[in-house]
Length: 134
Image 1 (cartoon, rainbow, N blue to C red):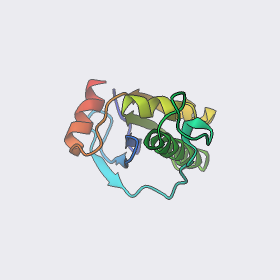
Image 2 (image 1 turned 90 degrees about the horizontal axis):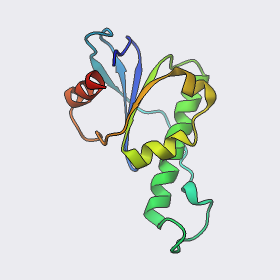
Image 3 (image 1 turned 90 degrees about the vertical axis):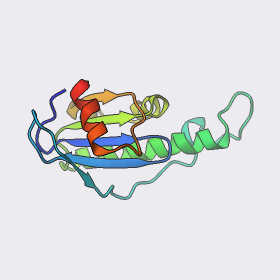
Image 4 (image 1 turned 60 degrees about the vertical axis):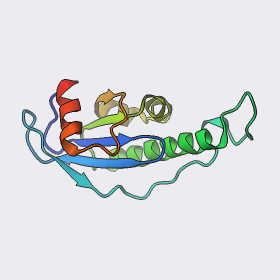
């Protein structure tokens, strides 16, 4: 996948978010780490505030789902405010599924692609390689 200059890359799992901006060009991306803006995480997660049971996710899963909802909310705000023109999201598969539930239509329109991999904690060169291979 080609990554335009100034494109944002969000790398997430259920507990951590890393944001990057491409300071290179589309053919030779160079990711620069950014400080993520403040975000709210929904403590109810995807379970609607219900307690744990056999039919509901456990507390840690609710927390991870809430974190994913918070990431999507923050990304939606950044896109709607005009701070993000193009975006790639790399996330653990389950987190990516939860993120998708909360995308604003404007975010979806600016989304260049999604990569279902957990690359949090990986070196920037690994992230750049995953984007190039996508």
